[in-house]
Image 1 (tube, rainbow, N blue to C red):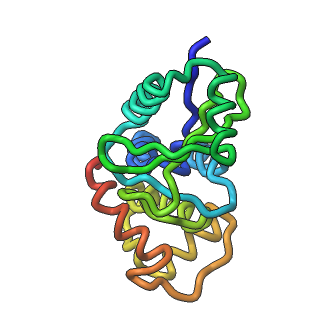
Image 2: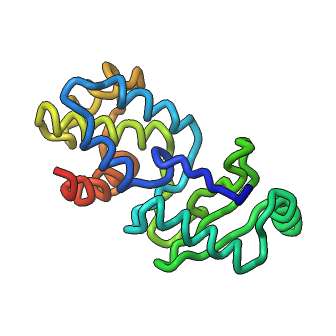
Length: 187
């Protein structure tokens, strides 16, 4: 069986997540909450570039083919030769980490490299908050930079603690500033 990739798009692919959020019908918080659960609780790198998940998959598999890596055993040996991970650069200059995937049918687990071009480092609660706020704004309107609204969404939808401030260039405010122009593509 040929190698297949695994990419958690909720955690690592902003455009995919925003497009998925745009497809949620008004009041369909269940779909939102199911997706947000896949984000986890750690820090991660979120890809902001234009390559689709299918294009990322295709380029990664093409590079594995160039390295003559076709089987699970060959892939495992290749990873072991570099402390159990490898780094690939794709056509848009983004860097991707490849690790061993837990799913037997998707051994090539990948995510953007830390501080890769076209990516931003985010904490899970910040990412969940940003997605929820962008969806709230789509459904109900409001200024998602208003601290009162931010805390309403964080506490009622996400069961997260309220925050004391929302700096424009840092944390949640900074992530919203990056995601809003991308989100506008799916309105």
